[in-house]
Structure formats: structure tokens, C-alpha cells
Image (cartoon, rainbow, N blue to C red; front, side, top):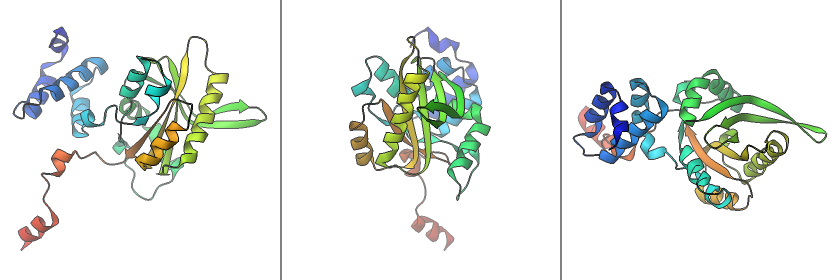
Length: 242
């Protein structure tokens, strides 16, 4: 297992043992051990990510990274993604507007950074760029220390549309021209939407020359298939009531 396992506090070990010992999910437990060491998670943070099944979401976004980024940067960029992202910390309910969601994310920037993953540093919201004779405003701009690259994030409260890729790609190109230095790697983009058609998203990514990822978000905690299978059906509930 390596010496790293001994740097994990006993309380964290107890949480993992209670969750995964009887089911024999050794690889899942080791996944969280690595994350604890990498991110310095508290036990509450660990429990939160277990509740949202991080091991099933990590690296799952649709991306063009393998095609447009050199190895090993492409693998690292892919691993930094999730699908879906969980924004349950915003405490928002339907209906809500795009601006309201972004404001809620910024009001909980520490939790948002935690959900984005290790290495992300916040640069700005509605970040202003002077492009030609116009002003462009990037939704959310981050810098990833591991990738040594800017990351442009667009959050859409609607269904993914192919045109969203073009808008995000334009912002990324602007960042490459105006902010990126010789020490930085090419900018990556992340489009987080309420829902998407995976085939349409894949086609849109293939049409773009920019390294972009597309993922969904949820405002409530992710329920894994294993947990869903243990939930009672409507028929079971009705039978119980009778």
C-alpha cells in the first residue's frame, strides 16, 4: 500500500473501514486514501465526498483533452474533471436564474474550489478582457497549479447547446493571447450545464480545436446506482401504507 497510508489519521481509517471493509471494496477505499493525502481532507470532507460518490464521478467529463493536449497533461486534465459536479452547498431550489447560481457559487467559493478539485486557484468572476473594440466577460476564471494553465469555466443553467462550445472557445483563445505567458500551458475550458445530450456534446467537442470538457451539475447529492437499487419502489411504499 505504501508509506502514504500511515499519514492518514485513524479517524479517517475508521470511516473507510466502516464503509468499505465488509463489502471488500479495497480499490475504492484506496482511492479515498490517496485523495486524503493529496488534499489534506478533514473527516467531514471525506464523508461528504463519500456521500456524493466521488469515485464514480472523478474524471468522467466528456473532453477533447486526449486529442488536443500532450501526455501526461491530457491524463491529468481528464482526472481533474467530474461528471456530475455537485453544487448542493448552494442550497438553491427551482426556479433559479444563471446569475443567481453563479452568485451562490461565489458566495461559497471555498466549497466550490473543493468540488472543482486539487490545484485550482480562483482568479476572477465576470473577468473583463478587452478584445479588439469590444469587452468580453468570462464567467469564471481559474488557474490550475498542477497543469500550469488557466481554466475558463462557463456555467449554464440550461441544456447543453453546440453553440456553447464556440463561445467558450473564443474566451479561451482570448486568454491565450492576453493572459497566458511563455511559462503557462495552453488554456483549458470547462462547460458545466444542467443536462446534456452526450452524442451532441461529443460531436461539438470534435469540431473544436480547443481542449474543452463538458459536464453536468446537480444541486442535490448524487445518488449512486448501488444506493438507488436499495431504495423502495412506489409499489413497496404503497404496500407498506396498506
